[in-house]
Length: 83
Image (cartoon, helix red, strand yellow):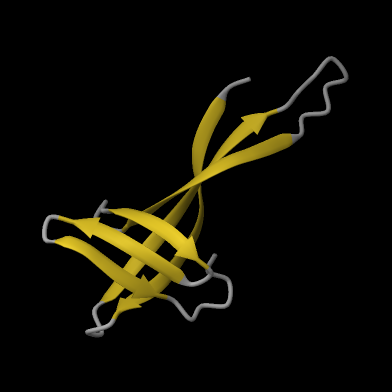
C-alpha cells in the first residue's frame, strides 16, 4: 500500500490579537486495492500547516496552536467546516 499526502482543506483562523492565518489540511491517503480491484481510498493522519509552512496542532473543534520561531500561538476558527 502506497501512502501519499494530499491537500484536502483550507480555512482561516485568528489569534487573540486579531492576526489572521490561512491553514491548510493535508490528509494521508492509501489506495486499498485488493485482488477484487475495489480501488477504495483509505485515509490516515492529517497534517495542518500555515500558508507559510509553520506546523499547526489541532487541539479541538475550531482550536489550534501554531508553532513559530517566537513560540506557540493559540488560534481559533469559526469556519463551520474547519475541523
